[in-house]
Image (cartoon, rainbow, N blue to C red; front, side, top):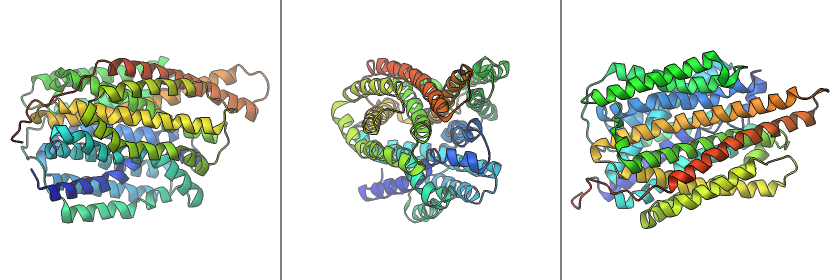
Amino acid sequence: METKLNTKIILVTFMIGAFFAILNETLLNIALTELMVVFDIDAPTVQWMATGFMLVMGVLMPISALLIQWFTTRQMFIGVMAVFLMGTVIAACAINFPMLLTGRMIQAVGTGLLIPVIMNALLFMYRPEVRGKVMGTFGLVIMFAPAIGPTLSGVIVDLFGWRWLFIFVIPFALFSILFAIKFLQNVGEVTRPKVDILSIVLSSIGIGGIVYGFSSAGEDPEGFSSVKILSIIFTSLLSLLFFVLRQLKLEEPLLDVRVFKYKNYSLGVSLFVLVIMAMFASEIVMPMYLQGPLGYSAKLAGLLLLPGALLNGLMSPVMGGLFDKFGPRKLMIPGTLVLVGVMIFFSNINPSMHIWSFIFVYILLMLSISAIMMPAHTNALNELPKKLYPHGTAIGNTLQPIGGALGVSIFVSIMSQGENSYLEKQSGPVTEKIMNEAMTHGVHHAYWFALALSVVAFGIALFIKKAIAPDFDKAD
């Protein structure tokens, strides 16, 4: 274990790098509308700026468990931040959409490998009884960065233009690398397990195919009834099945799926993914609705989301402390109940609603998320033995971008199909009013799905208990 001073320096190093890497998950959300105009692309195409980012992250997460055991903490952190910086520079210099998307995907490589490195290190650095507070402090980054992304994006886009969304990040990413070179120390051990290429291929096909299949459903006129889409999803699920079966047979699996034998881990990760789906989808759909039927500029739409974003980040350490003191149930059960209420409100949203009611409900959304996500994830990891830390963090972090990508894809697909079905019923000319009504109709459909997810999340929360770490004794 490191000294207290070194532990603090390591945590600060992690937070600096992670903030700007994770910020990019949602930094472009409000800029998507402008990018459609600048590059003359449609909504399903520009959606890949968000979905593709999470797709790459999801494909890389399973490999992170292997890399964490092959390279030191310093090597991993500095390396992935350098990759992230390279992607940011390419995106900032983009002259067309393919170049912009390429830079974005390279950014995702850095972000996708960074989070498991940090989460694994924190599990080794801190005892279970204080992890809630530590994870909550780190949650300032994990929750605050993507939550404030739309707000910051709106201001930057309106004042400077979309390109500055990347230029702004470059000096901070460079500073993070230099800071890590000087201060970061290694945590954990390098064991260099055997590399199983077939496992990497199977996981990449499975995870990549699932996200691609769901994302493509929004572009295909037949949606989820398309033979092509169903074939991709089926092939991906089959690949994941073979992947899981292979992991159970290997002495040194790429991802040890035996972590799901631990009940609290399974329930906690499931709850975490459901909330991720609702949150990421909301952060895509709501900015579109604010700039569409409600008629707000990108900057103002971002500012309307700011109170909820700020409170979400600031409450994360508080929720972590409450988790350490009271356990997960007293946070998750009320949190999921509030989430259900929020989704009921959003499923009835309309252009005539008072904007203050939207701000208030969005604040409730962010509060409920802070009461659920970090406690659920921390409680899940607390139940695992030390040898499974890299696998537990890798699996949990693999499911996060998958859940986010699926949430975004399904929400946008449902919203688009709802809009189209409404427009098909119109016999006269399509006016701006009818377009706004169509989008409202589509958003309602999307949030009915979110409401169903929230009800399931509440049901899961009822069965979660406080986890006890199996091999953290008094000597640790």
